[in-house]
Length: 287
View 1 (tube, one colour):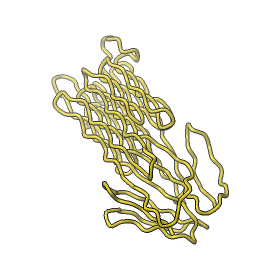
View 2 (view 1 turned 135 degrees about the horizontal axis):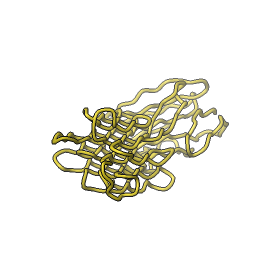
View 3 (view 1 turned 90 degrees about the vertical axis):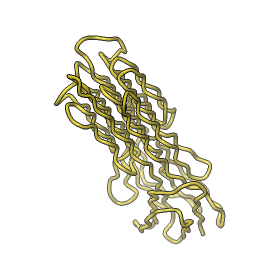
């Protein structure tokens, strides 16, 4: 059974063969939202992958975490929500701090706003967010950028003079037969046009004289941090929702409850089920 995936930052995994009835899962939580005005970018949703031994006829929980809300009206962004497969939980991305707040902890940590600090990620799921200000959490004029959110492959970039920090790339998943770029942090908000921080894989660009960009749906990307200058202050971007990918032998069948939105294709000798929406109490059963 060949499983194709390349995890940037956690190591590269070659194709390999495993015995039935194992399933390979890729589990991504919702990304955090970016904060308001000179703000930190949201952290990427936590990312986990491993093989899981299934029992035929058993219903396994599936839950897709929502992205965190965009920060508005002096507020930091919202934390992303957890995604679940069976008893495995990926932690939602941390929120990006507003101009007067640190970032929030999460699967990957949110970036700090203005002169505040980024937050830690969850071990084995993601990395910390970057610092605002001069990169040390200490006020330095005229540095007003926010830190980038952390991603699944690296810490978020620190702000530099008037410029938001750049987020680093996340994870490339190849199991579907094409590259899926996921779990990158949101860029930090800058002071003015051209000073926006870049988002990572699926993460939104920070504001810099323009509107911050939300994380892409079903990537777990963090939302970009809002910008602010000359009395004009803007909202952050919302975080992207999470994703579950299940890879199993083509000879087997996965049956989903009615509240699950998914698509299943055959790639080589595998079936690949990509789950884009699933609320509470939804399951998948294998046979």
